[in-house]
Image (cartoon, rainbow, N blue to C red; front, top):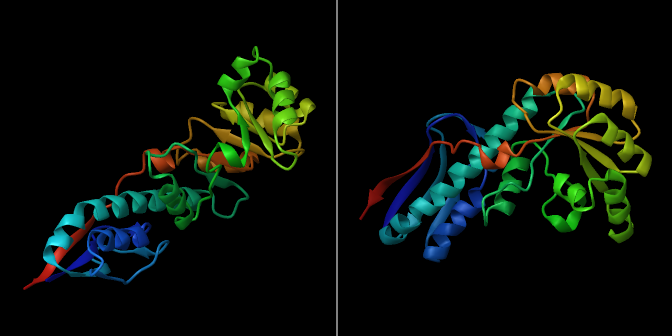
Length: 247
């Protein structure tokens, strides 16, 4: 039998703690996990996050998988907190994307929310997002892509379309898109897009997003910024599981 402690080695925002605990119980149902913090909580270096008690074999077997999950999800939550802090006091919402590691979609989305940012679509089933390849598949016409989507989508499902220039934006507005994503536009193009849209529908910005750019985008008046980096590039945080008792 033995005991171990989960320790934060740096400042971070926690996420994935319930799954951390479930990994140990999956390996051995007799393992007891005591969570001393919660998802979304910011902790400092040397903070005691959890205690684990059980057979030493189970603790050592589950250790790496449990740590991999909590380190990665806490990294996403920490990054989410950072990007939301950059636009604090504005209307801008930072969204994640579907760019998640296989098998990690749900955990990644939960981690983003724990850090204070917002979820975009979970899958293809909860919203229509017309991307560049969809437009290309119907001959390059924004109008045609929107018409086909409107014909086939359920009545209450919103339709968003990605555009790369102001001419496409004008087409999307005329054809009745519910949301428009401005893809890889520079700040001046975005400013003009906001003027052209005049608040009629929400605007989302994607591509070329950095932490430093976020305050400028907030001032330009867009509604959403989507960042794939929240779930595919967040740095795994430094947490350690240390054996403190063995008998």
